[in-house]
Length: 329
Image (cartoon, rainbow, N blue to C red):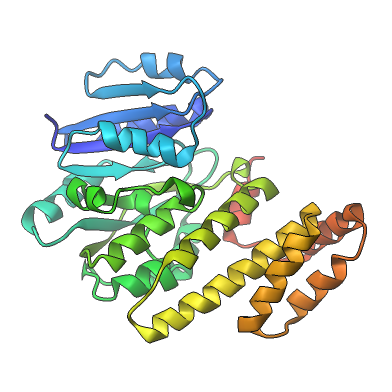
């Protein structure tokens, strides 16, 4: 039985899956199994997987789409290793990822998981150093030192500095929190890390760049945004922090998410739901130009609302994520 289970959940991305799988097969540490769980992909994913002649690969194919989180859970439930990592089908691991993270877990039995830093790569799998640096600063990774993370609840919930795809876990700690919550589908990675922190698990940060996270044009859409915001609202609403400062942060983040989702609802034409969420957010955030403008726009015809929101997005300066996604598209 392999010591490490590597899980790649996939859906309709055979063109990226080959890259992701090869980064696992090129690991300097070899005692692993690779589980590819396919959420009913209509493309040539089965043929791509069949082309890999490696006995360590196990393929789970769902004939019908069962959803992101349930697909992830299927790989988790089938895994047999003491250690576990899940990363997406458009990402990758650097060759020393497993060797370095396994060593830390082997030598530190009190540590439940090890999170590393990661590269940003573009559509063509090129590492983008400027975006990698901006990403580390944006999420506070540049402020984390190597070692046990003392303020794990703050790092996971408030700063969101850790990432599931660049983290090796003890399988036992994931089992204890019941791994991914299907009700948090779309926001399941964030939710998992916060729940681990709330249960008092111990995280370790390794600043080495040992994972590759890809930005590409296929990742963004209004539909995905709505799905994510609904899941985020569900997740934040379920937390309760002992630290009162962090609990106040939770209430503010909940209101901000209500505001974001309310605006998206208004854009989509779900007027009543949008206004209700914006009104709720005002109770915590107070009046703001964003909320006031959103409520005013809600009285316009749906097609005009969409044009206005589209124009606002075009005016917004592009960040490093949008710049990388727009390359080679």
